Image (cartoon, rainbow over all chains, first blue to last red):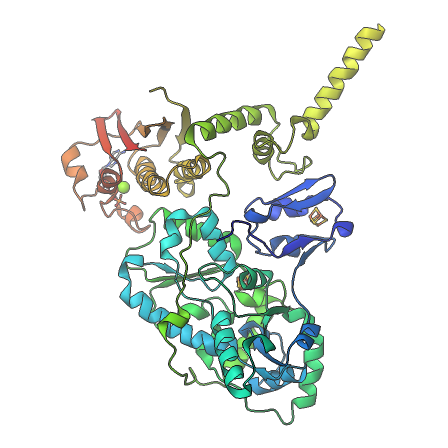
Length: 427
Length: 140
Ligand SMILES: Nc1ncnc2c1ncn2[C@@H]1O[C@H](COP(=O)(O)OP(=O)(O)OP(=O)(O)O)[C@@H](O)[C@H]1O
Ligand code: SF4
Ligand code: SF4
Ligand SMILES: [Mg+2]
């Protein structure tokens, strides 16, 4: 696999004021402000969306596609994430939202929640058959998978080696479309309606398999206004399109995936800070040996908290619970072979935080970092563009920053210069 | 072989929520140094158990971790009550942890056996009323 990792969060340069708010909130310290602009180090970014949430100037954006891309295809299918259902008030019938989506210009819709029910079943089997991998860590949130890959080498083996519900939905939808229309695969466009940039990245750079079946990823918030009006038009007479039940739709909120396992031996954590502490504890063996499963969602509340959604996650959760009421526990699904749902490539640890590639050199660098930290005031003020004094020290040792980027060091230097000048000029 | 790096941590028994800070910092540093994942896992587990023991059974103390190109040495020195019978303490399931500590999920008597299991050598010297020093090494 190619090493260049391409994330989806990017900077709108002309909007960035260099205020340093984002550098402090990045959980992997992937952002620096240089020349008054925020710069993201791609291979450290896990697309959690925290900087998009925090930026007061809306300078951080998520790369994504837009709906006019449907024109490139003869036939298109939309895959709504379950979190989309949670954006709508008083929705009693999922068919209204699904018919509304079709009305936006798609030829068909295939619910991600339907595929989620199949993944729930496959997960139950995998967990039952792989006791040595307990606790199995969910892989539905691509941010979590990437985080484990770059920061938790010892947990890579615990990752659930199954494709995401969105990915399975894409596969199944493509097959159905090909069977029904007789068109070739490339004439069919599969569009995922996503809550987050992380899933945009997963469609471009999948981890655990070679190529995604998703052709385009649209943001829920971009299609939202048009969807709401389309829904009012179709509300009186929606088509019958629902293919999922409570289990599938619950994947949109934290604990939903775990509930689908029908076992209570699980931990479900949401919010990137909580996710990191659970992974840290897991790495130190702090959980019981009989814990079966750990569900982790980078966003508060689960995918309903994604940065490309509209509603706040708490209101969204209530809405999802309302919709769920009217549905059966699960819908019937055709049998899907394991090889369709299982990862096809190994996930390898990528040590992006390593200082050097051998111990001796790394230790020398770490000693330099410690020495530099002694010189800095330890205020972590961020004025240098790095989130902490320590991070600046690391940047200096890596050769990408200099000591006088610290404004306190710079001030001392200037004071000294002016003293020297006064000595020379004799006053 | 000279030690290339030494890390020192004061462990206090005053704030239970801070127990584990030393092992978590060591873990972070070892990742930056590019030490193998398996060694990191064993160091993290052994050190965390030792750190918790210093907090629960002693009154805190000092942890010193030295790293050379061949091995990692962890020295945990406390000023606690000492261990009357080391062989007994090393047995899986033996614990003198009081109820309030057991309620927090500790006291299974698995700490020392886990430390032994995850290190290449372990040496405990102890004196009643003076303190205990545990030295563990893990080969790189
Ligand atoms: N640093 C220490 N000072 C004094 N006594 C100790 C120390 N470390 C361990 N002990 C004694 O050895 C016993 C066994 O320790 P061990 O770590 O194996 O189990 P535990 O701490 O009681 O329970 P667990 O580690 O499973 O939570 C302890 O109960 C305690 O009596
Ligand atoms: S938060 Fe970051 S991206 Fe936004 S203006 Fe400040 S420095 Fe720029
Ligand atoms: S929790 Fe869901 S919405 Fe948030 S990053 Fe993960 S997959 Fe995306
Ligand atoms: Mg113990």
